[in-house]
Image 1 (tube, one colour):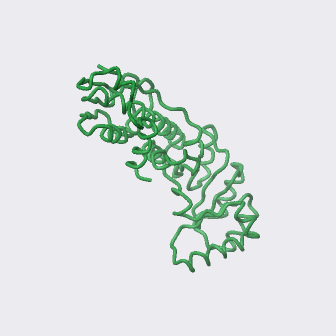
Image 2 (cartoon, rainbow, N blue to C red):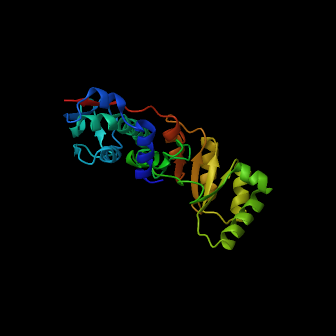
Image 3 (cartoon, rainbow, N blue to C red):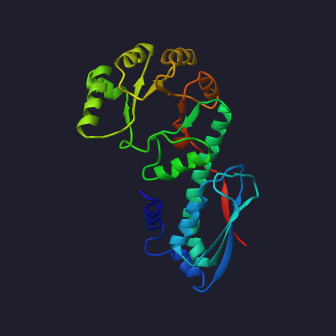
Length: 277
């Protein structure tokens, strides 16, 4: 779903036949100006989305951007000014804030995790644990916070997880079925497989046929062993219960990627406010 489609549906959800409060209390020819003010330190995200929201509400509104997406902000910073019809400004206010507060919360959380990793080679990934229909926005926020996106959906990468393996009848059968499927359908997709222990890891290494191995719920000690066993032959990804307190230890094992679902499904929105001036 494109940003335009998301915004169109969100505006319909909020306004439908009209913003009756603004229409009933404010003269139709009233003009005004407002500023988006930062009330909490963090990383700002969603400025471009807010611009599109106000444009969709009223193309005549003047949007004056002061701070770029992905910038560090502090309390009191002014991100943008919006000028024009007072009714139009109020009609777009809540949607613009909802998008920006959540996206900025995700970007801020992501930046904190990235800072923990520091200059190590490990890259931080998000997951598919996103709000339905808002995945594009939330994954954009992860990028703005310095993280990387995992697959966007079920359609752009193959990830053979534990349930796939169990239903397929084992690791070898799952990989064979995947290889045949790609060949029969003339598809070129990266293949990742999840392993739960060192025994399963060795099965995958003997079988081959994948691009990346997800080491799920491995302890740090076992992660070190796994990375040493793989020896760079495949990309490696640490996943499962990794927190801000433990991510540095996992990154120090030399694993290529660390995925953290909490980046998008367990965050607190950044406090922002649109104030009339």
